[in-house]
Length: 255
Length: 65
Image 1: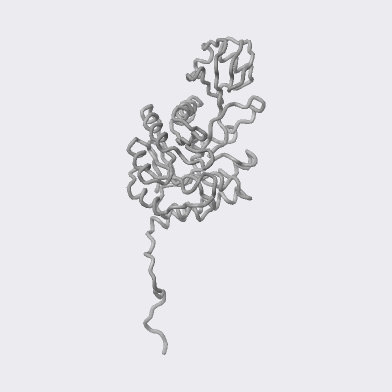
Image 2: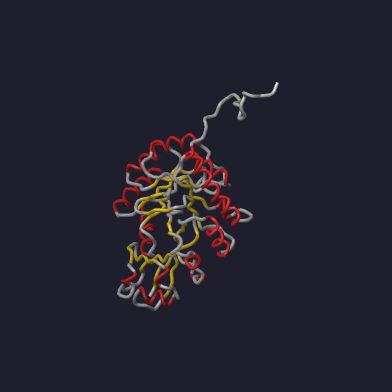
């Protein structure tokens, strides 16, 4: 079986999916199911005292899905480390999708902060999946710092632009010894396929499914996209050529 | 007693973290608690005493990407 291994975690599905922005919890539940994902991401936030009964954990079957908490919204190393520790207190698995943001407008990551937080959290025993931009050197540094997976963005978070720099992703993949998961910016199934065809070990997405007109159908499309891209990568594509090359035999044509 | 809970000043008559969570009608298994930036483990909720002006962060899981 073609499994993805991240530290001690192992999965059949290479699609990791977020739980944010769905119109209803029921819609999310159906979309997660249709995606075939085994890993779902969540965020940690202050309890809303006016509406604390409706908890998302009631809608995520932890026998079926492994929850991957994130540090979304953290702009400092300290806050990212605090959120990671709080996730562990909630009984969530001992891993973290680490995001240290650098800029509110573009949601671009702070590579320096991400690197520092990675080192600290690895020291504390967490399996760290480090979100970063598609910077070849940044990805190498995170791997060296002990990240179990490095997650370069395809495009800015929630932008749906697809993989903007396939060449960088390709080079990052060539260099990496840990799984590379393209995270963020994926808008539709073909974007996912492109990432997987490049050789990415997985794709993490949220908005592309959650805000599609029909999230359940899009989740299904993303699942197929991941599988198609993975198969195409493993199958080995033909090289691109400038000129035509006939598919039918040239010999034996009637005269 | 004055407590600062999730950034808001509140008045509570409670001795421990457990009392506070009960007052807030929060289930212990869906929250994590920081007291003055130090984690309070779930098994210590009953024994962790609160003092005037303590700062607490009470967090839970929400949807995210």
